[in-house]
Image (cartoon, rainbow over all chains, first blue to last red; front, top):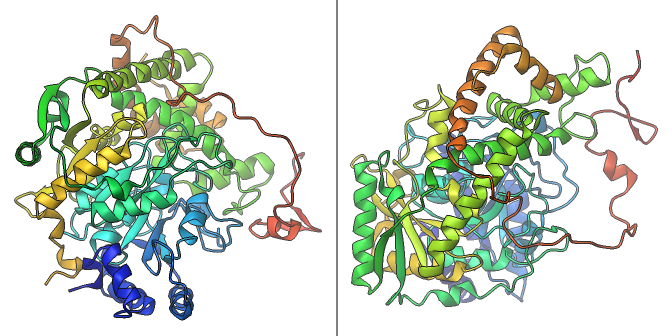
Length: 488
Length: 96
């Protein structure tokens, strides 16, 4: 039995009763990392000494306040951490050892005294759905290391699933928290766009990116979001909307909850196993007193095209800052300034990043802007309208997170379009900007986790959490552990 | 217009400050053609009277006073620079 089989709340009680110390927790974390991370590759950067030092310092404190006091955590490597190497899993930033400030989410976490264990692996610059685009050794799925953990927050999901940390932060632009959460059997929340500050998040697609927590339970997840959410004057797109106490929404009561199930989310392309797991989940909701009806989000099939045009366009602009001048790896083969930009970028970026920069630059280039970029912005309006219409009549939208369970390493790498199809059920949520969570709802015959996606209205994470928590408490899926996660 | 030529790839690469060898140019042309070809499906939709969405929240421009404040020192600003001289970032010559 791992200490991490407890919730944060349970550990808080144990710390207060002096049954355990923070040092015990950090040792648990590093013990598990040493045992499994050679296979899982969830971490890119670790600092055991610093973590232990912090643990001992916390143990000495009389005042043990902070809702994350002493809890070992991992941070996705596209979130800037002062003095702690931040690479975005890109060779371009391989030497970015000394970031000058903490992201707002990291500052907010630190105020609650968790222990940062290290930085987590990902697809390079968050572009990918399998972690195979990491500029380092790709993360593997703790349930079966022949399979991918999903992406781009694959390290964040795998580290929690493997019991290496109790919670992690990930980022979600088109499904990058929810899809790996589904593949690794953990809870992953993408909050409403603007709910969490993006200051200090290395931008991929600024109109879509959101930071969110990955945890083993819904309760832990709500607790972490409560800490990181809120308006930030350093991010002008963060929303000035009050943050409710999410943990208080976890009543277990979903009587009368109105669930919409989009027929497009159970259509062709979604595997039978996944479909059946979702239908079983709906039966659980019926038993709990909720009702569900089939609805339509008619523009769903256009979401993928819309997303790739918009996110790549934004990425091409955001990644223009990587020029080898102020930080990062500068090419040594350059003869003049322009050549230095070109060579540093061409040598430092991986194939998928280059592909997206090229696609985005093309969509924004003279003569194609209206046909592609602006057209996609207009279709985005139609997709958003679909959600607005359904969420005016229903409390939540429920469906699968992914069309299939985790696929095998190498299975989808030959054709970018096939890989992109993985995110077809998560992308519309980012385009609309509404919150969505993935929670475990079953296992495939092969023993791989299946994720249930619950989508809510703008800034109504509370209802999403309430629905997720009620299902979790009525089922046992979240209690199952992968063999690498410390199974008995 | 679903076919993206090798010439177009070279033009876009120049705009994006990237370079590819001949083989990569050909592969990029094929991949971009296939992605853009797929995205042509958006033309099925009549969006004549639809407003574009640039941002999902109803936010107006957020303004603040343009005031200087102390943030990082010169030394800190240079910490991650690949090359520096006399307190400044050094780059290769701009003019031949």
